[in-house]
Length: 205
Length: 162
View 1 (cartoon, one colour):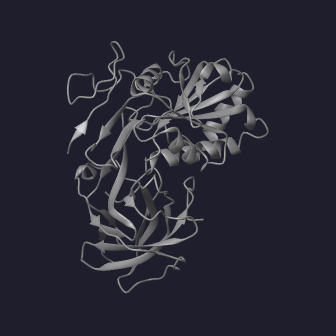
View 2: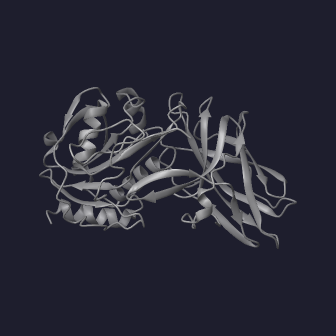
View 3: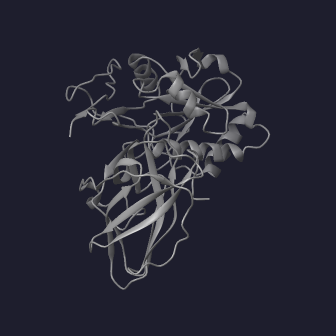
């Protein structure tokens, strides 16, 4: 099986498309392999930050432009058959539990597959979820830079097939109203757990 | 492994693409019922697809009412060129799909194929799976018997058959 890795080199944060020559994984992944939601120091991640990408309408999106909103961030791709729609459904379920402050929460779906995920493809995808959701794409270099900021990784699998898969970080990132990454969760975090954390950040805790 | 809840099993690393197919969508969901084999498949559903998003995934509960273990070893799905049994593996915070050779259903037990766990992955779906309609699935078990069921097409954000 042809596997082209697009892992993140942490020295220089350079995205390589090669079968060798790059650190395989980030040293401090956002979520544990055992499915833990609190691996490392997820309550005080110490990374993250602003970025600019292109949204589903083809417009430039700056994270700093949504100051005042609580943000949930997820890296995925629209051709993801299971993990991405499953995670997005969990996020929607969590937001259903947030109550009348739901409108103060914005969910960002950052594509790690810009080749297929054009703004038009993202628009079709995000409208399938009944929640305020922004789909973001960019150049491979832009995506790599954002992923590096959030210690996310991804690798393309079976790229000889038009329906190739992408292995990717599945953590859900919670960003506060000031743009600071406050916490991250394993993709299988329960909607109740996610809603509780979102609710606390909404209250300013 | 015994299905969705044993995703860490070493057997999951035995890669095996399991099926090729093609056919047509149908209009209604078939009520589950015991087959002559003693295998009952219920609450089967697939995610909707589009002209550009040509992948889907299938989920269901498989009940084995017999006194012998059964193993699902192959699936074909009408309208999808390729169907594979996959499970989600999490390693160092990164999720990946791993093909599995089969799904074991112990005697007098049920196994759930669920979102985020073991499921049926569908490639090259055309024409698109339209929500509210249904597709035909044909299962092949280790004893070579086959069983045909229908699965309802649910929205992309669905989490269950209903």
